[in-house]
Length: 130
Image (cartoon, rainbow, N blue to C red; front, side, top):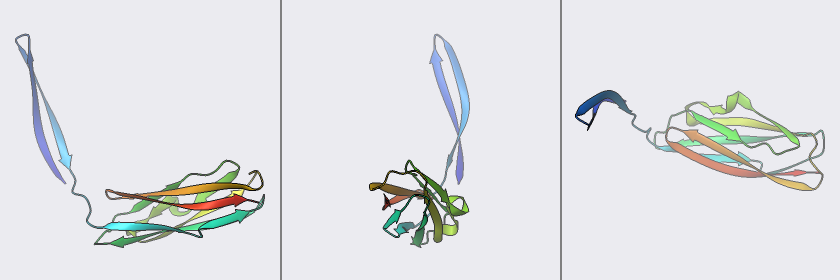
């Protein structure tokens, strides 16, 4: 990271004011990562728990931590392992989903969003209440 000192001046009505600010420029991490989730679909009865595995695979020297988040449909409880963090951009986290009160024969989409370095990716899976 490189920090620059910047002086801002404004003049009006014969008066001049100045302010000092700093600007820090952070170089983006090199490379990228891909995001995947499996299985592609789960069907859960009331009271049943299932899990998805969300994986990040780095390329081109990518080595930043990746933070994963997701929506949790109404009627389900959801919990992500490891605080949703994939260390070093390579590995996976688990996403547990329990059908608490979801209406039967209703389909949902869970979208996982992952950010690391300056990169952001998302992938989706299906969920059905039975």
